Amino acid sequence: MVNLVAAQKPLMNGLMKMAGVQPYSVEIEPGTVMNFWVPCETVKKPGKGEKKVTHLEKPTKPVVVLVHGFAAEGIVTWQFQVGALTKKYSVYVPDLLFFGGSITDKPDRSPTFQAEYLVQGLRKLGVEKCVVVGFSYGGMVAFKMAQMYPHMVEAMVVSGSILAMTDSISVESLNRLGFSSSAELLLPNSVKGLKALLSVAAYKKLWFPDRLHKDYLEVMFTNRKERAELLEGLVISNKDATIPSFPQRIHLLWGEEDQIFKQELAYNMK
Image 1 (cartoon, rainbow, N blue to C red):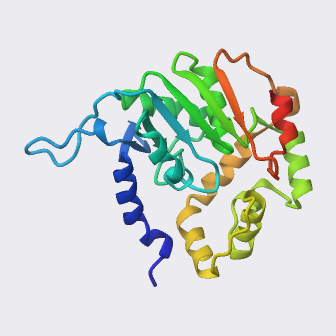
Image 2 (cartoon, rainbow, N blue to C red; image 1 turned 180 degrees about the vertical axis):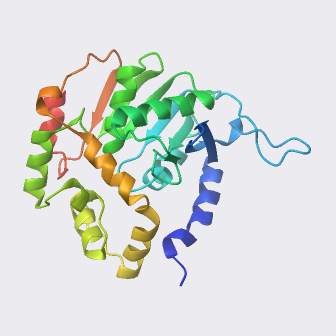
């Protein structure tokens, strides 16, 4: 039986290309490949006798990097924003490691690790400076990018995220939402579990047939072992939490009804 979510990917690719971005894989080092959606104008057509693009042109417009959350890969998260941004900006949409075909054989699972490899990938694509937009898990990766690479990250937009997932924030959030672990919430393995995640993550309640939920689980929740390890690597002890001094402008964009990270956390962070 055809997977309805997978079947939509060719259509998505076509629409995104019309919007100005197309997929491109970067081998950061042996064993580590990160997939990106990159500006179409930076992609050189293969030369005579070449089977694929060997290098990209540098971006010509200000760069915006859109970093996804934990429940979906990059372009699924940002598909509705890309077209609005590509006229004025060079838009890059990465799939973080263990999402959307990005993979590594390295054992580290921390947000710092994700940020380091994301920056290496962007540099290989010719990006020298950028504004980073991070949502949820992607926001924590974005904060690490800004902290470690201030000369690259000029400014940030962060939505529904925090500096770091501490013990106390993790326990409070899970208890409030009625989940025993982050994996139970963010790595559902059943239609019921996915519906529970969507009911928490989405403000507007949308109805989809169970068939579509099953297909989404099959396509979007791959690399379960590694993603569970990412969740374990996300939580840090309260005593290890620090507040960096960020030189960048940071814009916090929050939903008033955000159930996972309450608006109070945004005000405390500000």
